[in-house]
Length: 128
Image 1 (cartoon, rainbow, N blue to C red):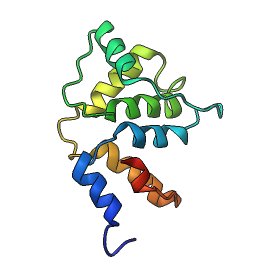
Image 2 (cartoon, rainbow, N blue to C red; image 1 turned 120 degrees about the vertical axis):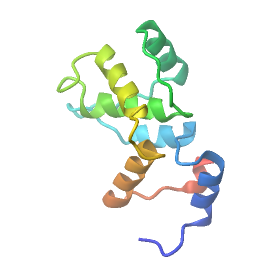
Image 3 (cartoon, rainbow, N blue to C red; image 1 turned 30 degrees about the horizontal axis):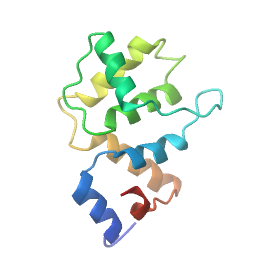
Image 4 (spheres, rainbow, N blue to C red; image 1 turned 180 degrees about the vertical axis):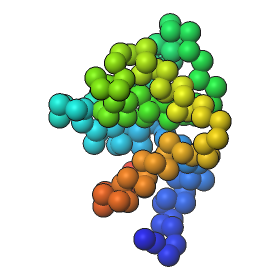
């Protein structure tokens, strides 16, 4: 789509890599709806970490807000269907984040590809 990457996007990657910072995660989750059309709320990072610990689930490769994004994605796309409860949602977060053969930045890259395919612009300067 672009011959060159916008400077603001390059700056985002230089600061955060292909990871969600809090602002980008908030932006991404703001567009999510569950299977009934209800808006998905973004979980606080601390709350996700607490719930993982309470369920004896250790996510080894979570960076910044990637796990928070995946948890919201689970609530939007899978909860009540293939994921039946919160513990299984947390296990999905671990499996997705810690996938040993996944490429670097898979969580963020999937989100960005969806935005590009849907024609959703990202104001990169607002995400810093």
